[in-house]
Length: 64
Image (cartoon, rainbow, N blue to C red; front, side, top):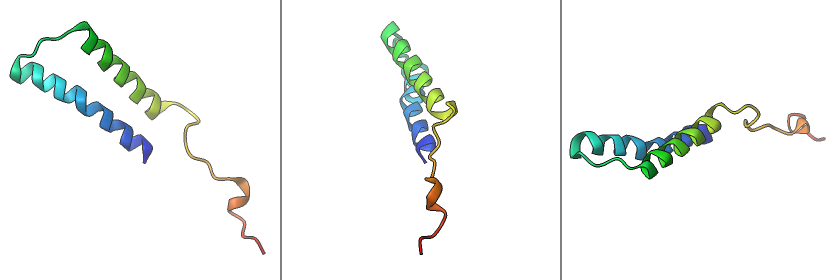
């Protein structure tokens, strides 16, 4: 679920791209740097190994 939620961080980038195309907004270096930071963090959240939730080993065996 957290991987899907991390894609929500791409929404501001899509909005910014649309603002450039439709509203002819100016592009600043700070906006580009922020976009790259967002893209990098989404990539890490999506593709970094070992970030999946793991169950404890004894959770699958019922206690008696």
